[in-house]
Length: 491
Image (cartoon, rainbow, N blue to C red; front, side, top):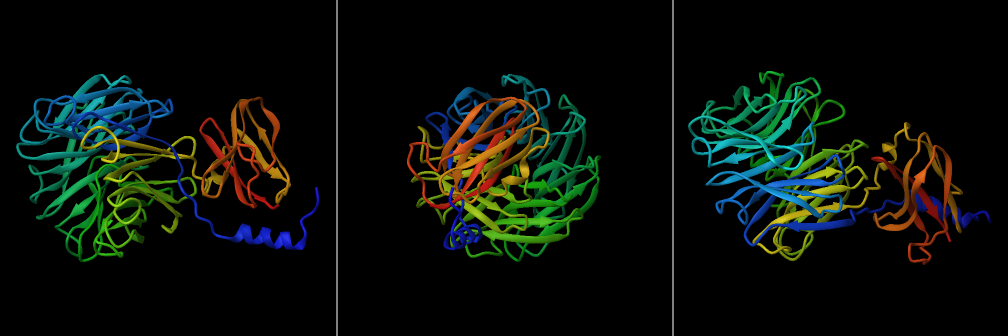
């Protein structure tokens, strides 16, 4: 192979230093529902690589609305659906798989208890009801978020009109493994304070996110409450400006790798639009480290956030600025300081909303929401799966599986050999992607024994056509491990 001349070396350096825009290419999109209205609120990948969604339906079950659960395989094809509720209105906002491969669903019910009650549904792995519980007093309670705790019980967050000091207070309920209440607590002041999401923290306590009208700078402010394992307050914090600044229910707060917290929502105090997507990062004591906004001149709303292996974040929500004329699903990928790496939109010519996002075991993302662009009803559940995210992916490999992964020569003009060393036998997939995240060439998918192996890329795509000079990524995937290397092709 000839050596690159000085001109080629200049091109190489420029290509390696040149910033590039990456997008989340769609693997599949699906919609689920009947002839009436369905709203998908939460999605989670299951242990077998499939997906589960929850929300509510008016097409099935009680016509006033029931909790709706959809279970799919890894391709988004329906395995089964379930409804839960009584003779009145039910809604759900978050679903997670439990340690016994069943599922826990948080929401609200008007069928059981007084007025509206916090509602918790536990199913087995096939979606059959194990038990259901309601929580609250004689007035109005809502449940927006639930998680299985380290003792195999459950923590539920929402709002209460029965307990506390204000018109509504943030409401936290801890149960045992059968849904029997262990304790409850309310947080807030004399105004309207609501809880939207809860996560158990590394020390066994809890972080709650919601909004407050009792404290803060004005309007509605983001409200964080940090508790110990018994639900007693350790600290509280408010964040925002003189207008409305709110997180959203379900998945809007996460503990970060450094022990701090990140909150996704939307703001009217900052940014360029009517509302902007809002991302807030604090330290472990609730002191603000930074805040960022994303969007245009109209409406952009953040619903869900997750930290990624490189320390950055993925945020899902909805936008009226980008994509089609009406609302589209809005996905924003940031670095560890909240700086934008890429953004993308999904949907059709009508209303499409993103409510939940999660990183998948292949390095892509699964997004749950609801759509009016597709399906047969007023709105349908909407599920979007993306290809692997190639930004920052180099840090996610596991030394227990792959001890070396690289290619030579690099840069190259005709071909390059990808070499890798496996610590154990496994099914390996090696593929080449361009900087826009598009699949260019699948080099191999096969079972490999432990040891050194290689695959060659000749600069052709899957159809046998030559690709142009530029930066490409070689992605290695196996057993939930994914790692990538940057390659430079110069013709």
